[in-house]
Image (tube, rainbow, N blue to C red; front, side):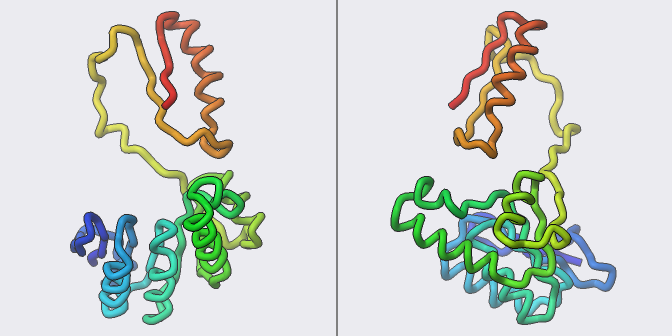
Length: 193
């Protein structure tokens, strides 16, 4: 099997991708594409036999849904967070208003399955009317074998957190955890950007 991924605006064949058991590839959508690139990707995806077409971000959800329906494949939306109610605050009046309309349209589609990356996101999707039975929670993962212990670069143990200060990011957990860290490493510091 193979997989279409969209990085840096180019189509790339990744032959080690998910194979649904019958030689059909799984198609994934990534972020950062222009409208023309998304249309070209949707057209290309429509010509590749797939069992599953997965939209993985706000930009790619609707093209992924259209490509899946065009070829009678399962339409999956991997949802990282729900922005309804926050678009204007996060992106301004013009982009925020368009984002609100876009996301309402995305959530109105009859997806075969929604994948939420956290229980928080699952609850937000349920609040938007998506039935709990249609949502699977699959947390984002980290392959710890890719990271080896490194000598510290800072003179004191330092944790740097780069995040929006919104409730779903749970930065307050880091602040509370630092109290525990400081019991073992009194010189440790935390920088939140």
